[in-house]
Length: 607
Image 1 (cartoon, rainbow, N blue to C red):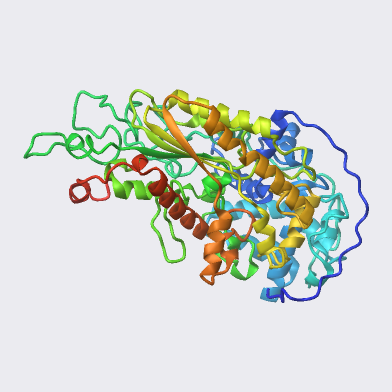
Image 2 (cartoon, helix red, strand yellow):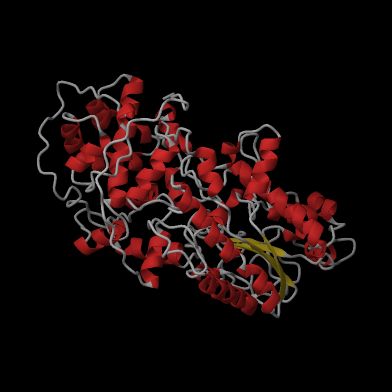
């Protein structure tokens, strides 16, 4: 769907004046909301599908979720949003995309809903069956509603999934005019409680959410050392180095002290084992002992975890079965790409997806650092709810030191609330960061280092994207306004058409960043030294534009908020150059045995 971005301003629907009631929330309510913040609508869909697809076979199909569980997990965002919240957004975006797909393929809308859409998932029979089950619940009612309107916003209001007529995503100039077959059911029927009959087991879902999405630990970790061996997603090998012996809690990446009687075992999982037949010395001792290995960890938010939603999911011209392959894996990785991130990326680069990371460079410098990485980034993390720090796996006595990146780039000023009162105060920010650092100091080996990165100046988001077309088919400005109306925006302060709001958010951000130099001056820690950098998004963008390149390529196109894959690679370059310049001793000397390690052990077991 092509549009002229220079066209005249679209006529806006008349907005009704509405009043918002201020309410204070407890810390627990804030934490719960932040965990659901980054484009909750898509994560809700993919998690629901994955949960249904992977239900244990021994559960009877008649097992029904109690109503309070449905309200807690399916409609939880209604407590913190407005006008129908996530349910409304899913309905509106879903109908609008299906209308576009029908028009592009010259199909009737009812034919797409009843016969075509679910076949996009035919690469996985369970996915397709789940889609068809959902279609059986709501398909006829959606079709009947579209008989009398082409406006997705109005259709979802008639379905009683949207409750505020002033929250409009699609403007009149964007309407897609439906065609329906003669067989389309015109009877809307009962539109109350559309999901009343949804049934699926639930207790294991709660347990999975608690371990993976609340405690941020690997789901599959037999020996309890916080490292997994078999599963990539669910906080497994995508997030931290692979455990090469998941039956021994004393064997894991990053271990320094030999715990076993047999001295030539791979007790730290870097792929180096055995004895040199010529010198009769263990290879670990010969190749690594004097090289001073050091690990890499990142504590952060969705930027550190590298949040990404594939744009082909929202661009109907790219819809095909291959476009949705991997949707379950994406959900189980929380829509994050830690294995391609700036701090802990280890995946191979491709021409369209460059992967450069601080960890990769540390391994190039010393092959004994292989697999010694941990990504503890969490979508929604902020200074006052950073419990994922307790998932850090390090033993102060038995493990190598580690370089920690502490980055909380946005959530202390970012949330969906349409006011400034929910942003973190400077005093609370200072205390929150110090609390995190004190915990790190209590578990980290001596000789470690901490690099703190400040909040990003998010004004570049609106400045770069506001008049461009989002993959869903509306301008970013219209999308931002719509999400703000529903109080679903990842960041009301930055993703806002009001320049005064953006500038006020910048002032608060500046006050929070000013706490880092104070921490450097006032706080002392036993086991690490530290430094602070401002987050370099504007610096990186300026250099990119100076080369004649489009700055929009540095922002994820679907959420319009997070750094893209290219930006992650450039960020990794920037971090490495800064540390080389300011703290070269942190990196250690290059291991003179690297070539020998490659010759003897190849890729050291991979990842």
